[in-house]
Amino acid sequence: MKFRYIIVLIVVSAMSCGPKKGIVTKRKNDSTNKTVVVKNDKVETKKPTVTPNTTTNKAPSTVDAYIAIYAAIAKDNMRHHKIPASITLAQGILESGVGRGRLAVEANNHFGIKCHGWKGAKIYHDDDRSQECFRKYTKAEMSYEDHSKFLTGRSRYASLFKLRPNDYKGWAKGLRAAGYATDRKYPQKLISLIERYQLHKYDDEVLSGATTAQTKRKSITIIEGRKTSAIKKHTVTKGDTLYSLSRLYKTTVEAIKSQNKLKSNDLTIGQELIIPN
Image (cartoon, rainbow, N blue to C red; front, side, top):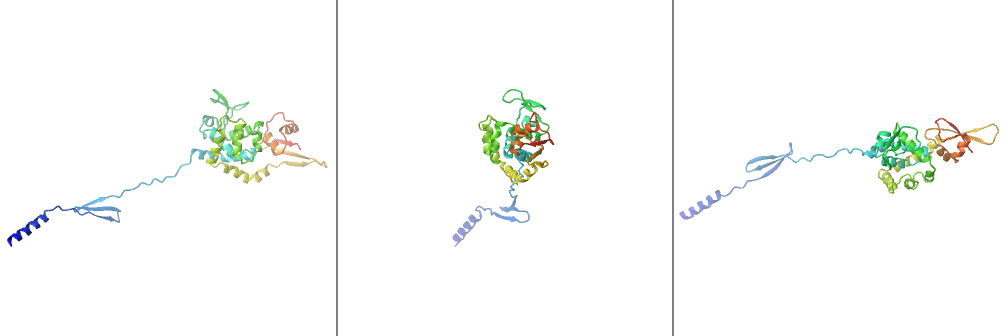
């Protein structure tokens, strides 16, 4: 009997001396959103991991900023000179280095137009040759206007104006073929810019309002006495050139010059021209 009692005491003693495992419980404190851990009767508090909010407003790209400034000017030139606004913008972006090139910054020359008899201010810049002469403008808008006159005033670009007014691919390839640029990839570069930044939408905007623009450029018809013939007169506005007027009235530059006894191609705003029949 005593022997059994001794065995029981030994077993109970062995159980009481065994390792005591900690009990871990977790609960969330709703008011602080913290995790509370109870381990071996000790309370530990862990702060939740906070994921930083990385959402930011994306700033417009340099190209987008350039387009925002000059799109209206390109569209206005398209109305007056029939050059796709998309082409004008793409050329400006490419040739001016998005308005950051030296010629654009110091001379407002966005199209790299060289002097070629230019009587205005000049700037010298390394291009195909060292220190070539380039035109210098007081405003970038003047560079855009001169670019349009450059294309409309030279016969080698005449075939481009026979294309559909929104055929930017034809214009891009035609400029290279006419000798505007020596870079073989010039057409692809223009087309890439137009399609990437959807510049063709500006052509569509101009064409959708073409009727309004044409109404403003109607000529004045004067009937003299009982004569059956009519005399058409046109008052020169900003952007008009002899070439653009010859296309508008379906005549020739030489015919307009002869009719008005002009010795040069220069026109002045407000000048009244007689348009040959």
